[in-house]
Length: 162
Length: 289
Image (cartoon, rainbow over all chains, first blue to last red):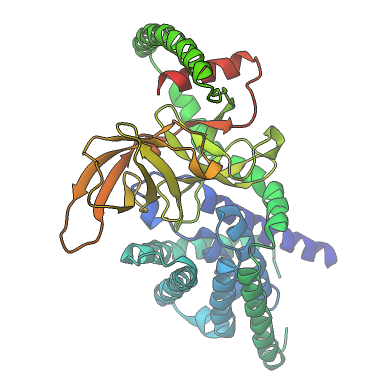
């Protein structure tokens, strides 16, 4: 039992690590504005599937790591990740029963929330100009969600992550 | 199965905890610098891993380059090298003359500084700032505030150092201002970043100032951050609006900030060591001035 648990934990953290690598990976300038938030999408999946194990404090840690790796002001993404995962965790039962398409739309809105929170905190710090380009990753994340969901669900069933 | 109702209370508690911690992080950002540096050092191998696939493609493309392309490139480089060494001959003569004249005037001599070539590690950064990450860190003696230049001009300064990599703030970042002077008449101004890679703003330039389109701006050495005499930008537009108190002057950075690959780190207070790499770096640097 404990071995299985350890196994599951390894699978979750490995997927989060891969998400973090995707966040750092250089992409061509054309694709740059559409770059999806891989890490957040993966975190959302785990919070939805196993909300009693991976929730707000996990998101806080992940957000802080991302802040450090991006060289941003500490605390911005830890705050945004915690708030977004809170939204997921309190609604996980409803979200799970939605059909994939409806789920994608909700995820898109949640991603918009995330980008607005990041912008808002950044704005309090040093007033960058707002542009709607900031919300493009929400669009690509919305489109990608069903595949991320599918891959991670297979992973979870295969390795019996609980 | 876990109970649902007991958990929902604790989620609120967790959220409160996370929010309080985040706000604490936001306020203590400056004080947490050592902790951040340590964490970044531990995580910096990830930056290398993240760039590995891209590097692999580059490597493949280089290996597949055709013979004729390599020949062409080689010829071009040889031609450039001849041109450069000719300029270098004249430069050496001028340098000696300059030193003699300065000695006659009793002014302090300009010393060469230690330099090191660094490569940009292409990783994504905070989209609200203009950073590049380079592949040298405190293991190589890089320090916060260190000036960074490329073959054409000033690129920026180091703002964050960890063991293996460091982060350079470009001169085009809105937070960055750099003291410059116009080479033509030694007028001093400050060039501010605008957030656009190809544009700097000169602020608070009086309307009577003698400034023209095409003027070259070089570092003035004031502020003790950037050593004197490195090219920064060229003036491209001057807007004389009667309703404004100052001129609106924009300049274009000399360094191609959108496609920098190799950079030079400068140690202003260290004399150069006699290494072949260092001396090669010195020559390319000096000729470009």
